Length: 189
Ligand SMILES: [Cu+2]
View: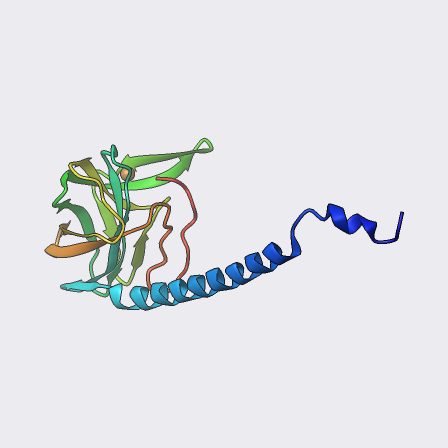
């Protein structure tokens, strides 16, 4: 048998392999373009709201499956005042009611519960509501949330009162990060 005779058994046709290589290249540049668009979109979507000495940054939620009856709302709340305030409730146009929840590990199991007094924001504190932690819970969802939607709602604070906000709906599984890009700590909601 001549040396190199094994070429006949090559697992691919060298010509079509070359085509495949070109295809990969064009897919890569499409991917790069898509990544740039994402960066640009993130930069303009940040929304901040001020209510007295409270600043609420970038309220967001996640896309929900069609049958979902609940969803979480996330944001950063900063209190630059001299007294504590409490996030006690809110509303969302697509939701029957809103509760304020926390998630905590109890006996190795991640559980969520309603905060009956609301979520305290102490003077000088910055509280991040994120998947796996504190969150606003949209109950009795009437319509699914789709990625890219902007959903109107309100937040109610014990002392500062009510503020209108708009939640930006991010992809399912988004972990948050807002401006800074510090990711959340996983944990499915
Ligand atoms: Cu919850």
